[in-house]
Amino acid sequence: MSAPSMPDTSDRLIFAIPKKGRLYEKSLNLLENIGVQFYRKPRHDIALVSNLPVAIVFLPAADIAKYVAEGNVDLGITGIDIIQESQCEDRVQQLLKVGFGKCKLQVQAPVASGVSSSEELVGKRIVTSFPHLTAKHFNELEKALGKEAGSTRIQFVSGSVEAACGLGLADGIVDLVESGETMKAAGLWAIDTIIPTESILIGNQKTRFPELAEKLRARVEGVITAKKYVLCQYNIHRDSLPAAQKVAPGRQSPTVTSLEQSGWVGVSVMIERNEVADKMDQLKSLGATDILILQISNCRV
Ligand SMILES: Nc1ncnc2c1ncn2[C@@H]1O[C@H](COP(=O)(O)OP(=O)(O)OP(=O)(O)O)[C@@H](O)[C@H]1O
Ligand SMILES: O=P(O)(O)OC[C@H]1O[C@H](OP(=O)(O)OP(=O)(O)O)[C@H](O)[C@@H]1O
Image 1 (cartoon, rainbow, N blue to C red):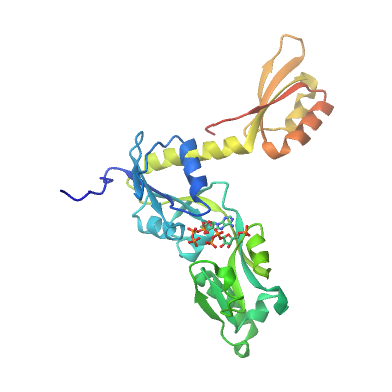
Image 2: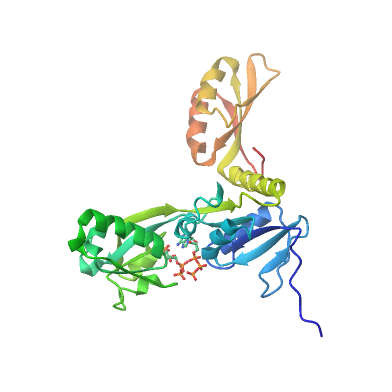
């Protein structure tokens, strides 16, 4: 019996997404929304896309920036925190924020310790999954405080960082915080922010498939824009159009069509979803009528 062979990916753009964790489901959802179709066999970390010359690889989120930087992978979804921790900022193209994975990398200390600033942890023990960013943060503080503050001991752990203080391993930790629930449950509080982070589509500049990479980037951009905007349609007297255009200028400019009723125009314009109620109030007060909000399911901008 012959051994199972790896799928042939030689003529395919390689697109990496996190194989588990917080970003996994959201990345899968994004791929579905950009029309990338594939079947992943159980326990396989590579899946061939059936409708595009693309292979999806499932990798640990923490490794994706390195793979893209080295050129083994053409496109990937990962966190800004990981790009910086892997020191890949200059070796990957940061193409587009994808709208999820928002959190902060924070210095945390036990509430009971009373420690309330990073400076108080200089010279002490810190546990983290982000040793590079943590060392950079504390090195800067050590320089500012001088030699007598001592050197901070930074120890790497790959997960459950929040347990380190309770177990007596650390005086403080550096970890990601979103809702703050994990930190609170471990009796910790945030005393400093190292960086805010979110998920991002990254690419290798020397990809063999620049056109396909751009096509996928544009599709992702379309999905993100569709989520961010709605289409607003309304009727207004032509005299009030300049004021209405100031309220809702659109991404480029509104589409204006003449109505049968003399002096009136119909306007169609994209507005940000989170501004809808406010913009509708303002348009109404300018005399607009029949104001409709329509969802955009996808777009190219
Ligand atoms: N609570 C969170 N809220 C939002 N984004 C997060 C959160 N935790 C992690 N992330 C983002 O997801 C990335 C991967 O983190 P996640 O905890 O899912 O890793 P993982 O692959 O499951 O690894 P681990 O084995 O450490 O759990 C992080 O680098 C960060 O960009
Ligand atoms: O502020 P919160 O909303 O509680 O989120 C923060 C937690 O999320 C991340 O871990 P995750 O739960 O992904 O798993 P991990 O501990 O295995 O990395 C992070 O490492 C924190 O533990």
